[in-house]
Image (cartoon, rainbow, N blue to C red; front, top):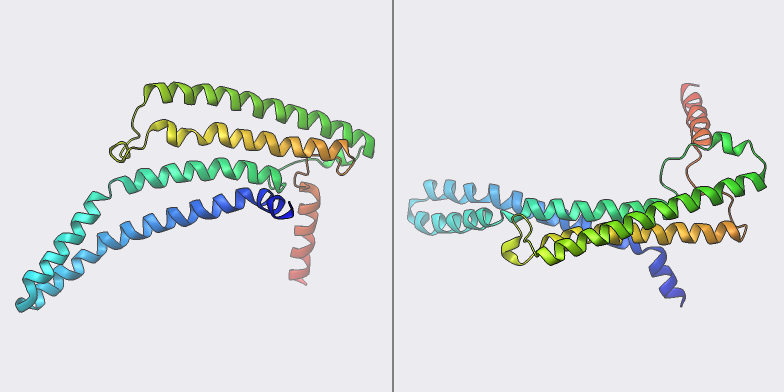
Length: 211
């Protein structure tokens, strides 16, 4: 049970790490292929005895590079998935920017009420976009249109777009967890960044550097 809890607590990080690794790998291979074939062509010009063999390798590599027209489209799709996993990750880790200096002036019970209202608004927003985006994906599923530059390998537009309802559903779940913690008096607000405290800390650090 604890292992499952740890997996759930770090669910977004795992996918974000995978998506970043996949984007990096695809881009790296594409760049290498687009620059490697010139090496074999240059070697073929210098070593006439092995020029036919070296040119053949160069032709093979340039063929691979030209066939990777899907790499840019795939990288864009992975980046889109990265954004929506990042939304949920930001909610879970309190990484989104928040300005709550005025709220901090209120008493703890008032802060809790404001936190409940804000959380309910966020839940409603996430639920609305989850439902709307799911209906959009249903339309794409029925249309069964291939994704740009990826349709020839069987990737459909709904395959890429399905991250939208998934991402907002994750956001809804993370805000629901915050709501439960507020109701249990484990926190008073959404856990968003304390802008005033961060600014004061940054100012203090800069003063120390100037001394």
